[in-house]
Length: 265
View 1: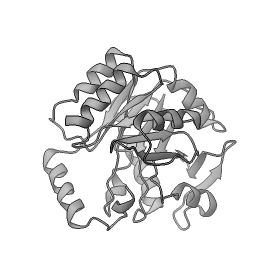
View 2: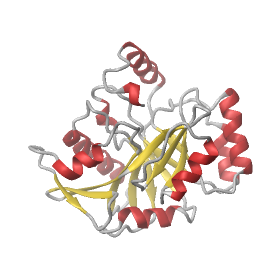
View 3: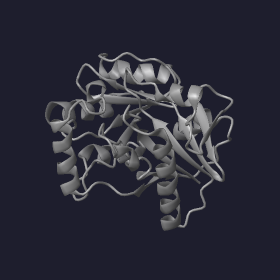
């Protein structure tokens, strides 16, 4: 079994040592809660244009944190080790489409432009060797944009996934798009999706999924990509925000819009 956070940002105000330590602690708690024997913990990055903290990890490591960063046999994954603690970090991108929707390209180091159509962005993610994910976002799956996503899911022949995240408040109705995804056997990949605010790095690993798979240490990204393309069951684990916390963080985000690089989201 593997436990994964499918939607991770590493904003400039985040301390990378805190990210790794907190993610490992969160994964360990989730593992014990589910009594699941996991063999790996994985963070899947979705870095916006202007960010490349994956390269920072690869080139400089995390000094004075206890974490050692090791390269694997592939360009888009890293193995982070702290004594008996191991976290894999896999590169990925987040793009904004012409329809003002978000698309994640996971498990790839391809450079994909913003501003393309939804269909073209999904195709570019696949062409770059990545997994294309349409992540839920507050207010982004309603109205006109919600209809665009539904029509795309109903008509596309491209391989695409949906993403849930820890920012969707507990008690909110589940998006109807999730029902459509289940009918079409489209996996829903859960992740924490931390906000660009100081301290939000402690949410990394708090919401994710458990997957029945074994990921060889030298080819974590490529093996995970192959497994996901077979449309496996992904069990969501962890906690989403309370409605109060969701409201509070949205206020913070608007009062300090550039405190952590929101202009690059």
